Image (tube, rainbow, N blue to C red; front, side, top):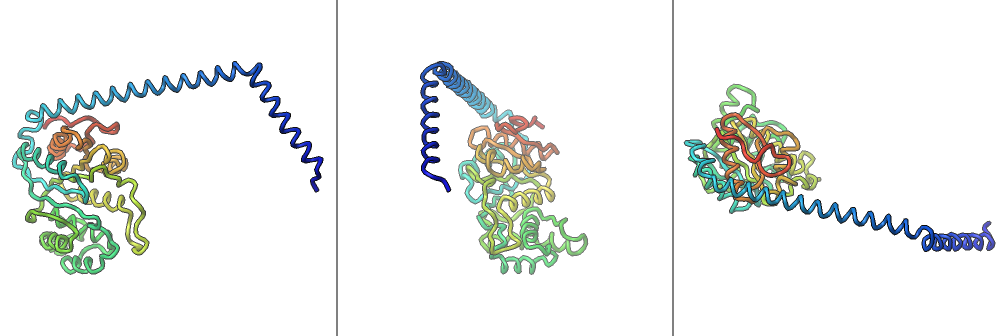
Length: 316
């Protein structure tokens, strides 16, 4: 059992240690400690100033590159998409101005907007989709048995008119012939929004949400065991669409390059091309060049982010 003398000795030891520390700190160790701390503070200030200078220089370079690309738009994109049919797909909260700028640049390059569709939050959500899946399977009985794969496949068929994910033969032919019916089913169910008539295409531009946080999406709904996190659902869809089309270009702003779909696809080495910088005037121009390059078999990652391969692809 610990008695009073033990506590007394412990307290005396603590105070002695404190006294020794005060004496040393105020005496022989005062200057070395002070000099060391001041040296560390000075080093941190220097690092801060260096980083600020580098950041300002990088921002200045991006601004100059953006101004150059924007000023050279007629030479950079003129005629690059002549007679090319392109479908534009937008995220649920995509910036309307960015979408309009991309559309305008596509048309300036000679391209034609074959379709303009917008995703909603639950476009590919399995939870609560029982009746909708029944409708889709009524249109195309050969859809995959897995619900998430069936939703994704039905949408890809609706957009591309191709169904290689279905067993080759009459079932695949029937599925491809039902592209319009599948598309209308998504529209009627409120899982897609569109102001254009249905047309299948081989080239797609997907515009990510403004300041997308897709990489930080929450886990799937616990009510649906076959459901997936949004990040995985969208990535799987982009990869499936890329497999069934000639080319897919995913474009977003700086947020998308850091936390959104552009970042996810670059990290996971997707075959889809990506563009960052839609918040800048050069972004839509780079997107057009990426479409033209992809249409000619060149895929890559373009823009101003550190993981972009270059600002824009070479002219084709």
